[in-house]
Amino acid sequence: MLFDPRPKSRREEVFDRDIEFEGLEESVRTYPITLLLGIRRVGKSSILRAYLNNKPSILVDCRELYGEKGHIAREDLIDELQKKGSLLSKLLSKFKAELDLKFLKLEPKDATLREILHELNEVGEKLGQPFILAFDEAQYLRFYGSRGGKELLALLAYAYDSLSNVRVIMTGSEVGLLHDFIGFEDYKSPLYGRLMGEVYIKPFDRETSMEFLRTGFNEIGVEISEGEIEKAVDLLDGIPGWLVTFGLEYSKVKDLEKALKRTLRVAKGLILGELKELEKRSIRYSLILQAIALGYNRWSLIRDYLAVKGHRTPEPRLHELLKNLKKMGWIEEKNRKYSLTDPVVVAVLKMEKG
Ligand code: ADP
Ligand code: MG
Image (tube, rainbow, N blue to C red; front, side):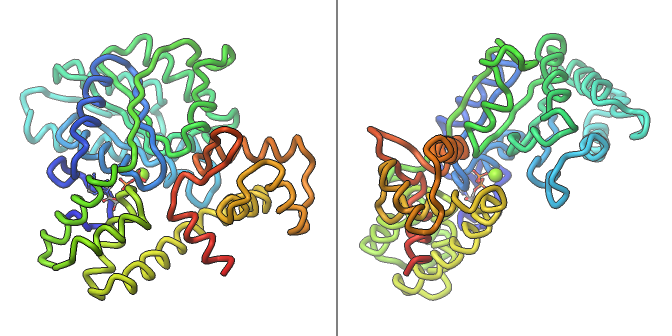
């Protein structure tokens, strides 16, 4: 069902995106490491899961591992790989008993990540196709261990150079942070100088967004006019996650105004949660986003807005905050004008004010 709010996990469930799947296919064929990039709710996890479906692979959700603890412990990552690995080896041995896979034979307490990678490589070799190790929201891996994830990067560099039957895919909604973490342009990074594939997932264009809604409503037998679909897309734009929320809400209330309001309410819950995370680092992040949502989109206007709100901010600090918001994918800058990347965030922040 198109309007299922969870990430999709099979190709047939994913609307459109042929070009992105092809790009991913091609990139994994070409590069040991592929980055799958795009803003929140654009469909990265769905595309990744659908792609991995029926391929020898392990998917690690880094945000989940990071979770409440606020860091990723070595033991937890190993545990996760072991768990998923042994599940997988059961599945594989069912279908490919003749392969005699002694897959992930190591006891968790003995295993090192390097040994696990070697085993994955061996499995890939035996199967005659690369084993894919995927990290969803990989920017969180910078919280692995005590050195900003450097040990893990060193290991990935080792796999990049030496394990020809392993492929790595990393997704990132915080594209700039992921680039910082991987640091392929930073000679101090273990992955320095290694070419990687990059596949960008963009929001749907207008026509595709409308077709997405038409198809979704058609599927569940809910009638809605073209005019209403158009109005919904006017507000929500092409981010599939929001289109799904709208689809669900409209099918409940069958009223455009009410459905849009409810969609924004749901969005508000999610977005305020994310803002709270940001505010843990600085209250100014939220204020900057609010300023931009309200149309104070130039550097000096943002500075003045912060001052009016009682948070006078020195110039270098403001530059740094704006740079971070760009890296985290919240804002874009064009011709010295800032804008929010997600129109629904604009709507929610305006609501906040009103
Ligand atoms: P991301 O990982 O980029 O944050 P998700 O894959 O979790 O995005 O997608 C967000 C929501 O949108 C989910 O409900 C998912 O089912 C839906 N979705 C995203 N892209 C598509 C698509 N191409 N077809 C159908 N549903 C999609
Ligand atoms: Mg995701």
